[in-house]
Length: 241
Image (cartoon, rainbow, N blue to C red; front, side):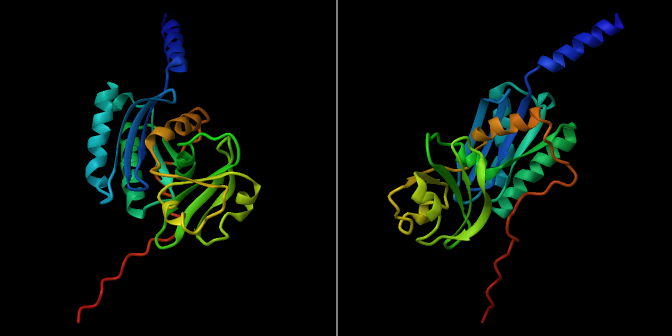
């Protein structure tokens, strides 16, 4: 009898659909989703130019839990956008994710911010280049093919008229993200297609976090840190005369 109950419990865990909480705070978009088996069941997000993530994140988590009819003890894992992106935004998201993973003894998953941004569009040929604003004419970017496989490393680069020339000469190039908006007047190649109003979202994170969960591609909760790409430089206070 004891073996029978153990067998039933093992079968339940094998066939149970994993529920993952996804957190995205790397840019102006504060975004949270609940996904079951990689499918979104609740999503809450807000693009806020004031970066009010510290105030919005935990209420958003509570709201998606309520909408998805899920409680925190039912979560199988928590996923967080790992960067690159806003230093403060990444710290807020990672701190919340690590706190939940530790408190409920569940796995922590990290998701490539630029990859999830790339997955916000569908295209049949060419490449997609997600770009995040890094001040002035600098952006964080990477290049992905039609299967959303990364084919160029993530870089912090200053945009000029020759940026991404290799890819533009070969075919269609889709540029999106808040970093792409300031490049429209500089990158004028006929193969350049700019997609407006796209930010990294917990919606696209769902597929990636599910794949990592199934593949047991997890982070060490104690030692995981965001991928900043560049060191944080605080603005120096102007001297008073």
